Length: 302
Image (cartoon, rainbow, N blue to C red; front, top):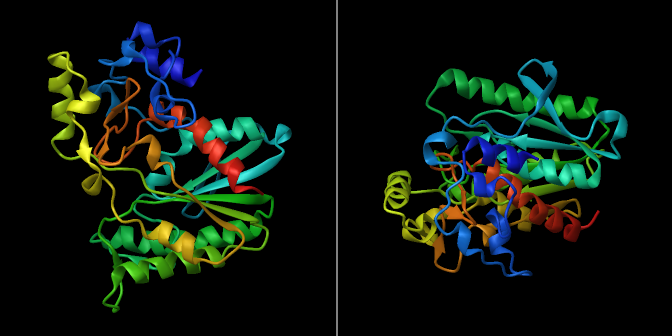
């Protein structure tokens, strides 16, 4: 299993068997779970997390700037096809979506571009080359969808906050919301369902050092290094767009409950390191979120 392998790589023998309350399971409101053995565990360690890639994905197609890799079940066994689209904050959800895809017998196709969410609004990027690539990539993504009518479910995720967009409007947030709504409307009718994932909490610059010090002192890093919820969670225009879309095929999925309490967001949860840097989640924590993302998607219906 992915969790067992990553835990073994982190050289944490007690976690190799995926103990009770591991990761997101420790924050499941339906089944309260506490495991004192995980109080001082941090898997993977901050040093190892930096070099860990997102969940495995097998390259299958390259058209222009659109690079497609596959996860989930093989095409011959698939009962449906899902596409994950967005920036690097889409990529880090792949570990959770692998769990979803296996359970639902879906073939997953990952189509992502760094700093380039699926939006009709133009992202403000200082690098002119990356800016032009982002504009071209989005055009080519729509062309790709028209050529792949087998994709019935699209999952979108993207960084909240950041540099913002290029617009003459004074209300940049509203303009960003409009950009997402327009982008989802432009997807072909063959896409029956669009699932919008709320962005994940961000760490403070001091968080990695705090975790290392807590580990050295044998202190619980999850609580000692927690950040204020209001600072960790950026206002998310994609979620506002999902609520405003007034479309039967757009649904919002918010898993913040598994990252944060009412006042704090935790950098270590159930013995698992949440972020591998300041704002991308680890594949280990993502995999533990999988069952709860599956539950949410099932609740959203077909």
